[in-house]
Length: 400
Image 1: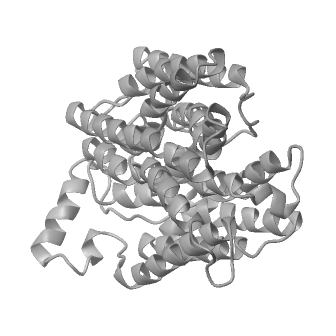
Image 2: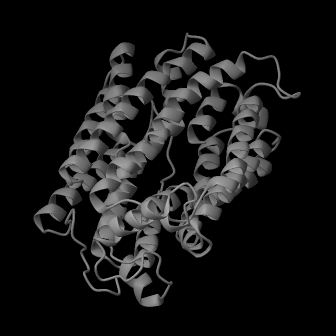
């Protein structure tokens, strides 16, 4: 959705809605009010009703609201849709990470989450291609311009979510496509690392919720994830705007197409690093490595006026910007014991954001440098202080 808004901006989104000044930034940021407030409740609801119901239904709500965005004509209407989108998206990433933790062992999670998170840069890449194709249409069901982008993408999302209502399952033991022997093996693999637990899906209780929330690994990793997302959102929301500032004389379709290659590089690097993290069963090294690379890319982007050099700098930033989704969620999952504590830990390690300004790009470079410096510092000291233990729970108590 963030890439969709950026693509819509090039197609007259601000002009049609009568936005001016910082209205666009406000529209982007208001999404995270409901997102941040609802993330932990959403993942707890995911545990309570089961991922097999929660994930398809919240995706369906997201798709329907996206379709509704195409029919917004005023600022209050777009604000209402953005708040609803934040509500429905709040449980998606933590819900999927929590769902995967029911299927895979600690060392395996990084790569599996990487396979899921690769959809973020891939969606950004195909979003640019898709948007350029949609904008070449005269109209869609009477809608024109940026409205077609939201309508078509929302319909696709809603249709896929509706199908998943009938296909998704809560855990290995209820998977209809597995044999009895395969179900038993899948459960046994997960339980082999949770010797303190007698079952994969335990009941919610207060002591386990506190253990997951106050786990030092959860809090430190959530802070790192927060810092990294300042960069991720800068790319997702403003990449089309950045491209427009670099190549102002190119057509809108050409500008949309130029957003694709950086996302392709980001997707390749994400899946490679996620595989390496699983192969060597470590995550904090890669979290540290990503920070200075991103800082270097933004430094080049902000300090040079040569168009091709600035465009190349985007690749440097995008190559390491997307690691947090897979590595941070795998980290908190690997360092909690029970299913209950894992659910709230993953919810706490949510996607948070800061209001940002469009680059000239006057993105606040101090915020970016500070966030990435903090992220790298925490990764280093957490390793030296053995806060992060890639394979062992930080709180070994059975109630954690």
